[in-house]
Length: 108
Image (spheres, rainbow, N blue to C red):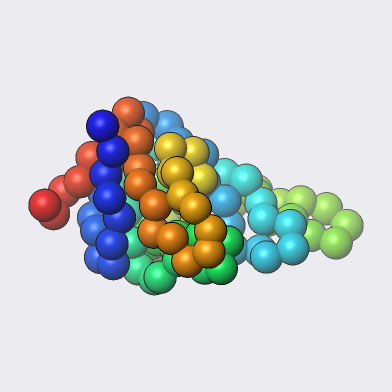
């Protein structure tokens, strides 16, 4: 089963899921822990990356730098992330769908 995405969809992360940051040239990998709540807060990009904001929960993201990478903890209110694992899409500008193994809709 899949979840069709749209603006302001609020989602519960059902199991640890991989995400990426919005660094266009070298996106850094990260993850959200089970129990995190996110909300879609922007439209898909040309390559169908769908942005979201973290409403509650946590995780970790790697910010890639010129000389070294830095890890930082994700906290509620953080944004500038894109869906990765469990997100299927067709470029360009496609919202795509999410796998219900990883996500549950909170505002049907």
